Image 1 (spheres, rainbow, N blue to C red):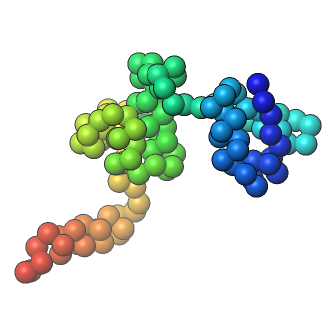
Image 2 (cartoon, one colour):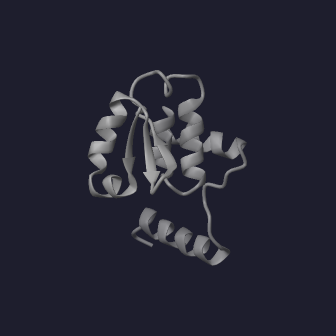
Length: 115
C-alpha cells in the first residue's frame, strides 16, 4: 500500500492514479488518513453483480453524472436506466414548476420549428 499527501494529489493526480493501479493508495492530510484511492479497472470490483448499477445510481442521484453517462456506466440504455431510477424513487427531472414549464416550451419549439 502506498500513500500520497494532499499536496501531491493536487499537484500530480495522475501519479496517484498510476500508484492506484499497483495497489491501494492512502491520501494523507497532515498526519491523518483522509481517503483511499482504489483502481477500478477490471472485474475485481466492477464485475461483481450490481456494483456498476449501484455506482451509477448514486452518482446520478447526487448530481455527479448526467443520466446518459450514468446509464452507460450501469451498462444500460438510457430508457432502461430511467426506468430503474423511477423504481428507486429517484427523480429524473428536478426544478420548480416554472423551470419545467420553460423547458417544456423550449422542447416544443425545438420539436415543432414551424409553429
